[in-house]
Length: 355
Image 1 (spheres, rainbow, N blue to C red):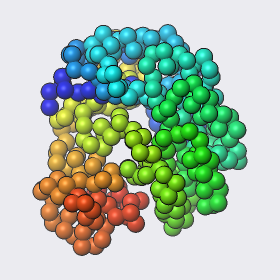
Image 2: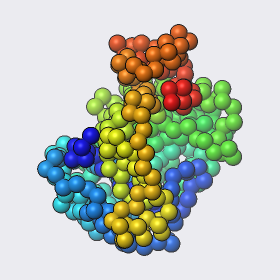
Image 3: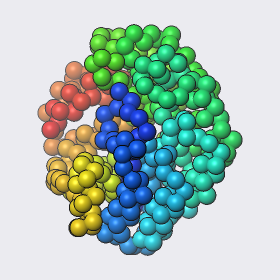
Image 4: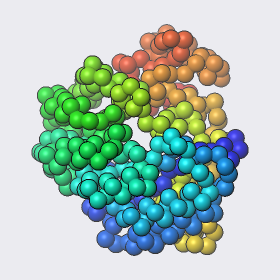
């Protein structure tokens, strides 16, 4: 694929005010690093690597870390750097991940001013005891208020995260969190399984039961599952993340960010100091390049989607496909192949059979 056909950008902001004990992502204490300097490096990387073409950008996702720490001057600089190289589509999906505590009126207005039209809010639970266990710096009331305030500010595209399988979590507790989420003006919900030994549910059967019940509960209430961890109302699917799952191409800017141009996967160094140094010297900080088997990559990404894949995608793996269909692990639906719902939690081990 030609680089001028890439129309999605991911920007990684690795800073957090404090570290939550369950988080796996690359992060740095915001009190120990100059955010201005990092944004300056991001702009240098964007100027160096982002190809200047007339093709409109379709999705822009700012993730982290805690991107909602960015001030107006930072957002202005980043939007300016990208728009100098690429026009924004009139229908662009521009997402920023945000902590509930950062959902303030002035910040909401600032995001809208620069074209942000979708917020992904890291709530994780609507129970104060669970939020305390997770080390979050907000309570359930603040979480609810944050979503409502964002909606009142004009954000129609709102997504929230909920964590499943906390140690000792019951279905009654989880159902209350999910019911509260669905009652709010959101269009999208990401449901992630907690995977930290000292925090998560050790019993796989309990985890599976919680997941299956959650899946049916959300579907029944109008949030249809379209990917292993993601549910949406009609029209509310996350367009940027679907680029990943549909094996699409995208740029990745920032420390630890990854990208894919259609043939080559690249990943920036996760070391913040190395990232800063390399960008200043070279204009980029790519630490790894790989050329995956594209047919296998399509299977590994596409089978995460509940829509599945056409049988033609399995042309190089007919024997594996036949066996998994016979075992009931995969199923045919509307002329496509997908993972049977009873085996969704075994997706990683299932996908490894195609590698």
